[in-house]
Length: 462
Image (cartoon, rainbow, N blue to C red; front, top):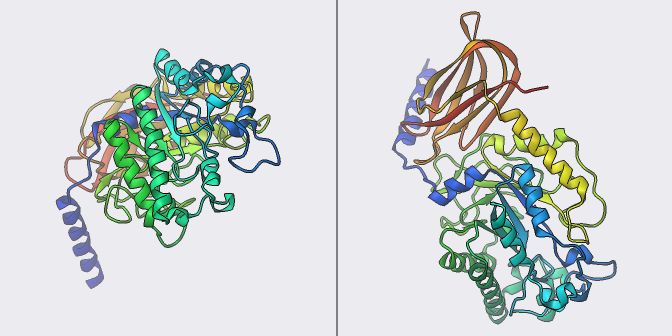
C-alpha cells in the first residue's frame, strides 16, 4: 500500500514539474523547415574523379571535368521524389571548391570545366529557384585535406580533434572558413540550410566530450554565418543530426534538448554517433532533427564510385516511415556520375519513391484540422483502415507524451494504437481494421493545452 501511495505522489510531482517548466519553442524558420520534411543531398566533387594512388586532397584540379553537367536534371529528379529542398556539396572534405573562390586555387577555376570559368554553385542555385525548390549548401569546416597538407598537417591527422590547437594555425583556418562561408552566403542569394559537417564531432564520437578548440571553432563560424544570413539554418545550432546515416530516427522523439555545455553551440546530451538521439521533453533548446541516408535509395556511399545498386522500394519507404513518420526530417542522397548527371536508374528510383508517398498519403479517408486533445473522426460508413497520420501544433513547443487511437467496431471502441510522441508528424501503421470512426485522445502531455494540427486516416493501397 505504501509503494502504491509513493508511486502516486511521484506521479503527481512529475506532472507538476512538467506543468511548471517552460517549454523550448521553435523559431518560424525551424517550423518552416519541419514542414519541408523531405530533401535531397547531391554529393558531387573532386572525389567523383579521384583515382587510386592519390591521398585525400591530392587529386589534381585538372581531374575535375564533367562533360554533361546539368544541375537542372538534379533538381528535377529531387522534385519528382517529392523533395522540397536540395543541398549541394559546395566544398567537401578534400577541399575542392565548386565555385571560383578567392581562398584557394584548388577549385573549379583550375579545372577544365568551362575552361576554368564555371561556377557550379551558381548553376545549382539558379536551377533550384527556377524549379521552385529551396537550396542549401554543404561545407566541411573541420576537414580540408588540400589546405591542411599545405599547412604541414598529415592526412592521417585530418580528423583529429586537437589538430588546430596551435593558435596561429587555428586563426588561419578560421579566417579561411569565414571567407568561404562569406562568399557562399553573400553571392548566391538566400539559403535555407548550411550543412556545416562535423559539428559536434568532439562531443559525439567519444564517451567523454572533448570540446576545446574544435568546439570554439564551430561556435565562432556558426555565429558569423548567422550574422550573414539570420534566416538560414545551420546544422548544429539550429538543426541536429539524428546520429546515424541509415535513415532512422529515435522514438519516442523530442525536438527539445539540453546541450553538452548549456549553450546553443554544442550537440545535445543525448547525441552519440550511431545511437538513439531522443532529445529531452524539458530541454532548454528547440532543435529539429534531420536524418541523412546514403543507402536507403541505393548502395555505394556518398560520392560516385561506379554503378550503384537500387534498393527495393520497401527499403526506401522504411526510411520514410522511420524518419518523417517519427517526427524528423529526411534528406536522401542522389549522386551524379562523372558526366555530372544523376544516372537514369537513380532518377527512376527517386520518382518511384515520390509516387509511392503520394499514393499512400494522397487521399485520406477522413481528415480533421481541429485542435482538440480528444477527437472523433467519422467515416460515413464502414471503412477498412491501417494508417493514421498525426501532426501536433508545435508553435508553443512539443507537448504530447502519450496518446491513443481507437476504432469504432460494431458500435464499440477498440484500442488499436497506444503511442508516445507526436511532434511534427507521427505515422502509425497497424493491422487493417474495419470501422465506422476513429477516436484520438491525448493521454499524457508535458504541459497544458496540447494542440493538434492535423489528423488523417488512410487505407494503404495494395
